[in-house]
Each structure stands twice: as structure tokens, then as C-alpha cells.
Image 1 (spheres, rainbow, N blue to C red):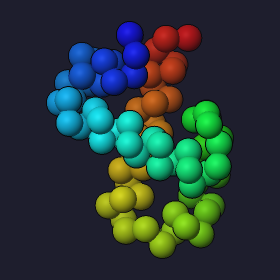
Image 2 (image 1 turned 90 degrees about the vertical axis):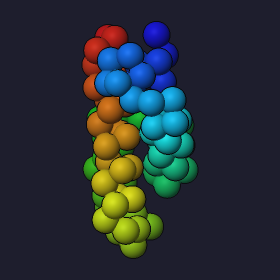
Image 3 (image 1 turned 45 degrees about the vertical axis):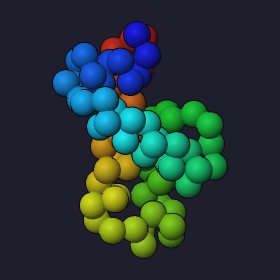
Image 4 (image 1 turned 180 degrees about the vertical axis):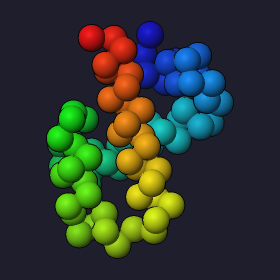
Length: 77
């Protein structure tokens, strides 16, 4: 089961919401300049100046996307 399917089935996200989470993860990858989300990504992100200037809402959404991705990874280890 891929991440988007997991969001829909396990977390009860809508199609649109699941795509939004994927988009946020791509944004995180761009900000931290890495291809893989891991347990160090959140720390790297919150220390970036580009992250600090984002609205509180956007910062929260990006952090939530990372946490969801890590939860997914942990569930399928």
C-alpha cells in the first residue's frame, strides 16, 4: 500500500487531502534539499530561515505531513 492509499484507508483522508499531503512533502523536500524524509527532516526544516518566515498555518501543515509520513514508514517497517 502506498502512502496516499494509506492516508485514505487508515487515516480517512479524502482524495484531495491526501494529494495535499503529498504536495506538502514535496515542498519539504525542496526546502531541505533532500529526496528522502527521515527522522532528521523535521529538525532540519524548523531551523531553516525559509521555514520561519512561512505562516503558522503553513508551518503546521508541513510538520503534520512529515509526521504522517514517518508514521507510515514506521507502520510498514
